[in-house]
Length: 430
Image 1 (tube, rainbow, N blue to C red):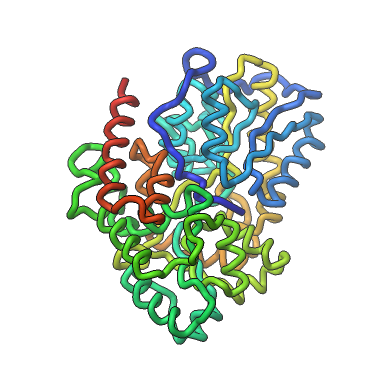
Image 2 (cartoon, rainbow, N blue to C red):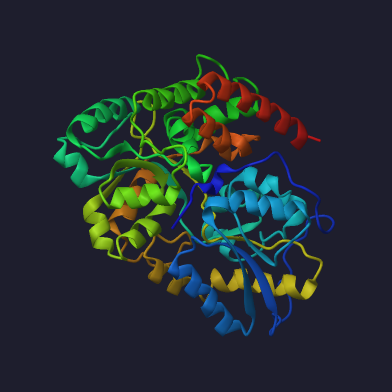
């Protein structure tokens, strides 16, 4: 899969112009239309299981899906740019984070799906992914994106190293790898993708501080500030900058792509990459589809400031909304799509995806070892990414890129993010 995190990272204060009037419940009455063509804005990082699910829906429903392909590297920015022009798809694959939903003014622009059967089966995830003000606007098929550090087992073993459990470990391991693993980047960064540095510079470090959304809520309530020089957000940026100044990253870190980082990890040219489980599909792809090779080669660990706490966010891959378009026939057909993929088509999707199901009552298939390890980290106390409820993080990827390039200091980044938060917070309250 892919970009995470590009997934859940590009957030803005609130949406652009809305389509339609007051929020409405999904229209589920009467037979679903047939012979309808539905436009789907989707991430091209979709797994084969998802693309096959689309095909199965077309065959079962008699409807067609017209795809608007959006590459993972530009996914958040492209969706929001298109949305701002007033363009609307019939079905939208999009991030489940609360702030991402607010970015599209979801309460006005999306059809309320709360009355559909999948909501109860989704449980608490329905309030986290696509949830707003007690209503559910999205169906989430994919397990949450779990963030941490992927590592090449063979590279670490050859250097006599164990997987990291803290940022202090990263610094120590970097020195060892530089002396014992010639030609291998200790940590591979990819500023060229525009979002990747946000993971290691901010989100991973904060994991241990955001239990029960404690830190995020303190920012939202204005009891704490992102730019507090003694606060954990600034500390994380400083830890990241220290890794930069001690040359722990690849020489082309500012321009390399996220895809480059994953390929380097599989090929043993990188020891570690900070990313999310949305990367596993692409890791498998770079290994020629050989999941055993990936499991034998790549490991995953949750990581925060001083503990092995992972963090997570609802994934955009397999998370679907029904935007209001004003075309009642297509809206009804789009709701039928949601009902089918969470109903008749769901079990086959889970079986093919080989991932833990998000809807109760569905058998868990045999899961790839790497994904299973990350899922264990998720269940073992992972905390929600801080950007999930804090407004104004739409530019964090860009600011983190500047930190990676040495163009601004950790405090500069934190000062800007606090400013963006205040602006976004004021805009969302209007």
